[in-house]
Image 1 (cartoon, one colour):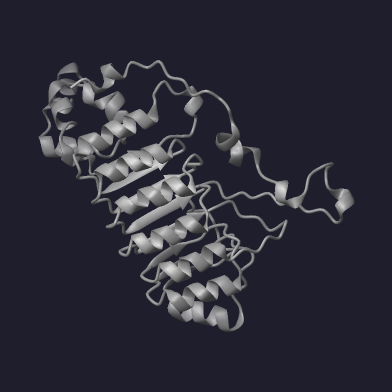
Image 2: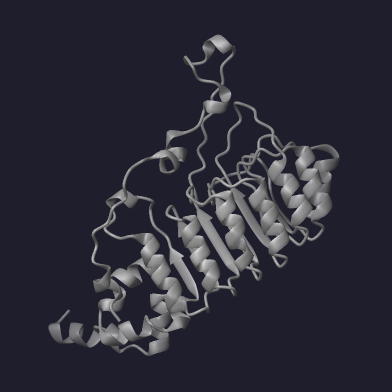
Amino acid sequence: MSTGTAEQESCDWTQLPADVTSTILSKIGAIDVLTSAQRVCSSWLRICHDPAMWRNIDMHNLGDLWDMDHDLEKMCRHAVDRSNGQLLSINIEYFGTDELLQYIANRSRNLRNLRLVSCYNISDQGFCEAIKGFPLLEELELSYCSLSQEALEAVGSLCPLLRSFKLNNRGHRCPKIECDDDAKAIAENMHGLRHLQLFGNELTNVGLQAILDACPHLESLDLRQCFNVNLVGKLGKICAERIRDLRHPNDSTHDYEFGADFQDFCWSSVEDYPSGISDIELVSDEDDYYEFSDYDFGYDFDYDYLFND
């Protein structure tokens, strides 16, 4: 290809129409916009200050916080500020805190979609307080977080428009732990649900029946790796007839966003346990790293450079 032809086919991205540029920038994620894209040229910087650009904030990252030069919480606050009250959807992964969630709640009462992934530093108390600020919430995902039945009850009572709920955890067959607390909270407080995902939950058939009885509008139900559930007999028939999109406990996880491998810890007797360890203590180092690590996530990054208006 000649040089002249290459020059003719090249595209000056900075000259694209503003609406086209805005659509493109909205696809690359808030972190890349704040650290890179907005600094390309003055026209892109201007577009990146438009509140409409920040109606959907995606703070996706790989969880390698110790290798980052950026304070993601500070960046997220800045993105929320730029939304100027127009925020509709936000995704926070690995770095969420009570203070950040409350900051969002105080400035985003129109929020419709909240997604929290591996936010171990968000407590029940902090979540319950912040959720008061999201009365219009329609979709909620809590994946690999450390929230209890109390938090789920608060969601049900404070978010009457909730239609989609995802509560995902790591599945395991052994040790066999049965717990219907989550199912009970959903059944008693989330009657308007249309879509429910309970990946890796410890609910039993009793808890599932309670959900089916209390959520008559349920259209899709994902029970993958809910190994205490046995969809046979009357319960299986009810699910098959009522649920349009049903995922069984042993269904394929190929389209599941997170790692779906699970480890079982089974011993035939007390003597087989490693010294000093009981069922209740068998937790993954990876799962609890952020909750118990005393690593100091200190940052010396120049944020005035990033956020200079």
